[in-house]
Amino acid sequence: MVQESEFDRNGIGLHYGRVKQTDIDRLDDAIRDVPDFPKPGILFKDITPILSDGDLLRLTIDGIIEMAEGVQVDKVVGIDARGFIFGAAMADRLGIGFVPIRKKGKLPWDTIGMSYSLEYGEAEVEVHKDAVAPGEKVMLVDDLLATGGTASAALKLLGELGADIVCAAFVIELAFLEGRKVLGEEVRTEALLTY
Ligand code: AMP
Image 1 (cartoon, helix red, strand yellow):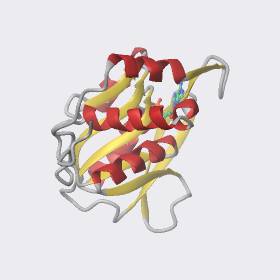
Image 2 (image 1 turned 30 degrees about the vertical axis):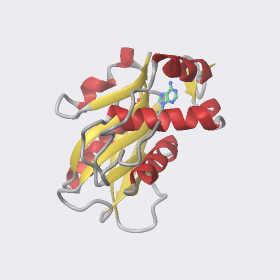
Image 3 (image 1 turned 45 degrees about the vertical axis):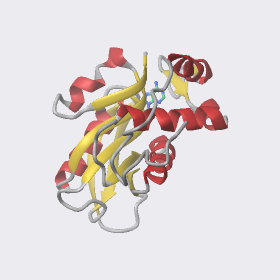
Image 4 (image 1 turned 135 degrees about the vertical axis):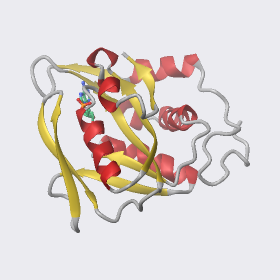
């Protein structure tokens, strides 16, 4: 049962119960493996069955928040596009702001950008120059950590803005791709489900 005092605005998960292993198993069962999408050889982890189930969506947000227990956060930063869903829900739960890191060409105002290699291609991400103030504590959220290229580019952008990066949290980590190493040891990296 969630306590009302659960969040001192931006202090995460102080009185929160642990996500149970049975709940992790439910999430694991719901995630759909789609072979050869978007390219041959990629086993795509489809999280849409989690999104369409109210209980599982809430469990996932609970889980991300619990993983970051103890950190102080001013803003949640989500990565285009599935990171927006989890990140915005989390920011709403914590009563703090949300910042989108978007694929190139989507943000309307002044941006800084960073190119990177993806598990299945090349891409560039951008953020608005004023999205984070120097010294603001931010938590990065995405659905999945694969090679770490996307999250690493996002962290570099946040670093350029002078953000204090307190945590990078993912629903899923493909540990065999060792993306965690790419993010570096100085970034607290958390994942709800590891494959
Ligand atoms: P990476 O930069 O290699 O860590 O890739 C992470 C980004 O690509 C995330 O935004 C994921 O949504 C997406 N992604 C990469 N590999 C997969 C996969 N096997 N299944 C689902 N999404 C993936």
